[in-house]
Amino acid sequence: AMAYTRADGNFLNTLSNTCSPTVTRVSAFLFAFGMIGLGIPFCSIVLRYSLLVGRVCGPRMSNVWSIYAPWLVSWAFYEGGLFTELIAWGGDLAIGPINFVMPLLVTLTALGVTTFKDVFETRRGCLAVWRRSDSEDKVNEETVAEPLPHWLKPYYRPIATVCAVLLTIMILLSIMSHS
Image (cartoon, rainbow, N blue to C red; front, side):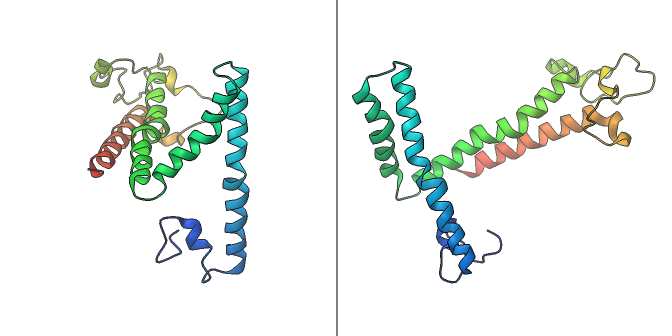
């Protein structure tokens, strides 16, 4: 998208423009047809089948929920910025924390930080730096996959903590920028 000086809101429109090379236009058409065009009927079929097999509703209502309802909802959001705003809020509230903050919180839990009190504890808290005398510190044992270079290993907890805090702040700033 950064290769184009004036990219449209729908980037496939920009790629399909006559100013784009032929291979780019053909690729945009194939992507739109193959991924988007064929994906909608596939999702409708899977949803209808799941509603019928799970006995959530009968054949008529499964058609309504799997075929007609998605088209009606998409038609309501088709023009205007409401859908774009909804997607932006959904990304900030769900995708950001799930993809960026939760893995760091799981890492901190694996590093022995289980309560807020552990954050400020000097011996085994998340800001504690490993020393050679910390023989009971299971975090610094050798493993098959090392997440940090050897010279950064003593600072594993502080790095994970700073990353979690910074990412949380960035997500909150992104949420505040929507208003």
